[in-house]
Image (tube, rainbow, N blue to C red; front, side):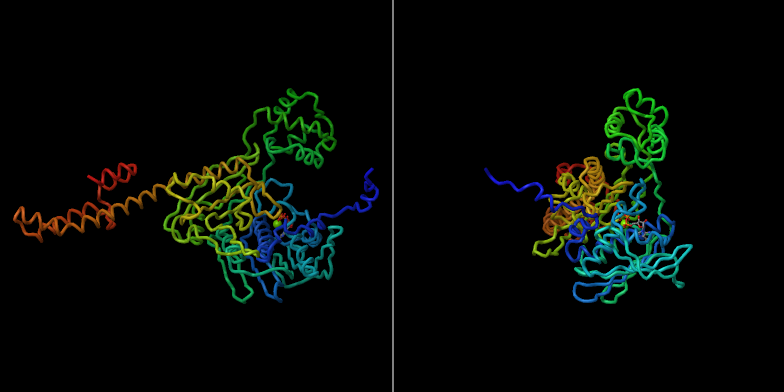
Length: 550
Ligand SMILES: Nc1ncnc2c1ncn2[C@@H]1O[C@H](COP(=O)(O)OP(=O)(O)OP(=O)(O)O)[C@@H](O)[C@H]1O
Ligand SMILES: [Mg+2]
């Protein structure tokens, strides 16, 4: 009989790990893979935190980023903002406890969601240099400086050298040293990331001091804060059993009925009565912390059987059509562009989101990236899909993203584009939501939810129709130009023949013919008084051909 290894033997190695230990081993999940990407990830985490903090406090953001080379692969990075500051008693948790923050349980559109970003940076600093990070922060009550270290085994912060400081104005400054990094000037680098951030957040000023000692200032274009996103309650159709149990167990309400009314939007006493009528055996009068999985499961099922008012849709804040036009002009310098903002929709039955889209044609649109990764493979061309989520540029993991999937799924031929990957065309998409379903903790790609993909497609198709009209106009112009040149080539011969037949002066005939033809093709010379051409423009391609033959 075969000898099996005893379970006692196998389970000798059984151990518990902290979440920090998990991410130490899997730092690529947080976006720390590849030196350039790791650099951009750190900047992205700190900048999104500063923007969120300023937005919540109603402050126009001023952010200073300084990156210095220490030795090959090793850099010091500092990010300073003019936000509300961080209370000293929470600074350890903010920067050195993975899964701690103010945003995780809330339904409000913010750039951060998970409570991982800041502590992920501390973890990366620790595993690549062994050093803690330094924080200086000032709020209305205190100004202090300290070092924050992350104890990986326990996922707990270790604060040292805490001292009061006098000279600091309100805000937070993070300083750290990081290894395994590279500062690169590319489509995936820090400068491009900051440029796109300011274009999608025109109320922010960001200064970058790069490792060459150059100061690049991205000044704010508007002096008003964007509309503050409204915090909403989750809609009953947007939760699963797990969510419901979690919400219930955190609730301080007296009964399950009160918990449902207080915690969800659109749940009233009337709706509770409706739910009770469908599932009378659910225990509605117990404390929510005692809600069992089986009852939660039943509740989620009943939620789907009754009629609800749609979720509140004014919880969303967009980049705005005008600003998207400015952003595309700045990044791609196109000959033509069209932008649309769709109406808010919901996914998973109850989570509101809104899609904005722009298409640009010509200029730098559709330019391929010529960067190669560490194995020498060309990095997937993202030049023609500019992705944003909650106004944050997404520069990596394009192939895992709902945006890329939707754009690639468009029948581009319908809109006058033969091959999307090869023509000078780019698409910009921003998806805004109180909860963006990212496909990984690194938050660089949006999960391929059907409702989101569908809505992105509709937005691109809206823009595509406008592009198609432009392209057929261009084609029509080219056709006319060819015809004009062909006719002009025969004008001498024709006027000679006519002069012989009619015994009129050849020069006179040539001049009259020229005037006639130029009038007929006046659009080519920038005059718009040519009726026949307008008629042609509104017709199909075949009809245009026929008309021009006449
Ligand atoms: N510059 C800052 N000013 C004020 N508060 C900050 C700042 N940076 C971080 N915080 C606070 O620290 C918390 C933790 O930040 P962290 O980046 O780890 O998580 P998050 O932003 O909530 O979510 P995500 O992991 O998606 O980024 C934030 O929720 C916020 O409350
Ligand atoms: Mg964050």
